[in-house]
Amino acid sequence: MYVLDFQGARVQFVDYQKAHPDDPLGTVSEAASYLYEQFNVKGVLSSAFFLDNDKFLGGVDGTPAENKNEQFLDANHRARDMSNKRLKSNPQDAEGLLALTLADGMESDYDALIVKKPMAGLSLMKQANAEAAKLLEVDPTAQDAYVALARPIT
Image (cartoon, rainbow, N blue to C red; front, side, top):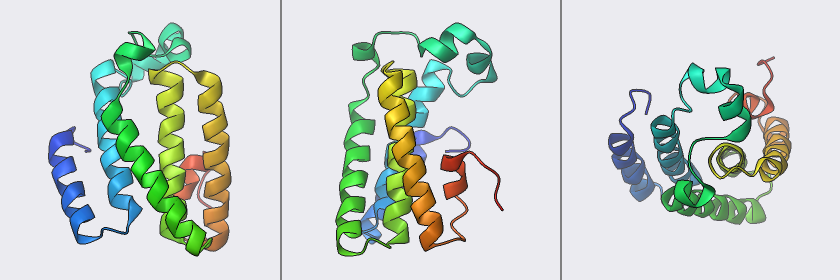
């Protein structure tokens, strides 16, 4: 995805899902590919987006209905369901906590920037922060959790 080859990344994520059907990280990565592809198309991945107060505060161009991303939502909800299933049987499951943190964090961005529901986005961001904090309690080496918490690695 770093070279903006979202379709190529999805092929790898689907292959990972086939090899690891119970691991939600493949599915949450697939969701990320759809969201970041949409972010790229809508200009969110550029610094110009964040320097334009109207865009940053008002979201991307287009109506929420025009911007709806069913593929992202489907993959993200599947990842969330897989994570919750793992966490139901083991509340300390680090992969489940990480995937849930990522899913909620991405949906927070989606709500705020794409479908222009900033309060829903803030609610999910708060949830993702709590999940990241719990992940760090379970696994202090899970450095990816610091991204959700927006604080430096200690």
